[in-house]
Image (cartoon, rainbow, N blue to C red; front, side, top):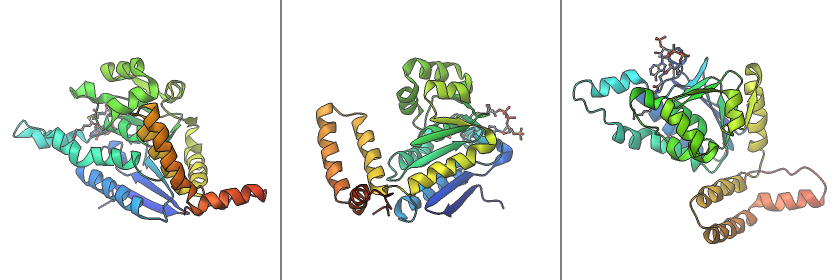
Length: 263
Ligand code: T3D
């Protein structure tokens, strides 16, 4: 049987590929559990200093496999969405947002429903020119989940987020860039080269400080300024105690490139 989640580690970069290309990488339980475990393992593994999430074939991910969702509720009429989200999607989204290492989404094709949420959750989003995005949930009588209600308005503003959520409108990569949904759009055949270049830059960065940057921004998203300032000061204390900070200072004074070890 083909692995539906592929993992490849190289030079501090872990690339996770959703691998069900004939279904645009629609997510089955097997994939969700494997993805959840891969993220847990990547968090623990010090040799991993940057993570890339992408899809095989022409799609990034069209969200939940609707066939398996249908099967779940076929007899009882109870699709058990709440429990399923709590058990699978929610820890995956939180796993990426709270990962103390940078996560990049390499959006190679259509990202729909919870697949769009998966594309949004990483810290840096690079889309291929042919990628498209839609909040497909409303088309099947569901609500945006897997963090879309939280992430999307923060990224593109409430008016545009509501437009996407209420209409299910599909937007192209150029619009996604204009709206601030992705950081970059690149020609399809240059996507993985560009992503690898950026991932390498991240993997050679001060990993602990990068983790603290994420932690600080996440905390500040809900905190009053006074609390955010206090939190920044605590995080800066911790960053100041890393070996990479000392290396960064030495490199500055010695007018050379810093050689960060992620320590
Ligand atoms: O806990 C829970 O389970 C709740 C969580 C819910 C989260 C959700 O994600 S709900 C939203 C689910 N997603 C959708 O409703 C999107 C459904 N897909 C589409 O609307 C379209 O496929 C796309 C707009 C994404 C792409 O369209 P297109 O024309 O480029 O491709 P296609 O021909 O529709 O799809 C290609 C194949 O992928 C096709 O299979 P086939 O007929 O060739 O064997 C299609 O059925 C399959 N596919 C696409 N999306 C899904 C899927 N199969 C299962 N589930 C899918 N979500």
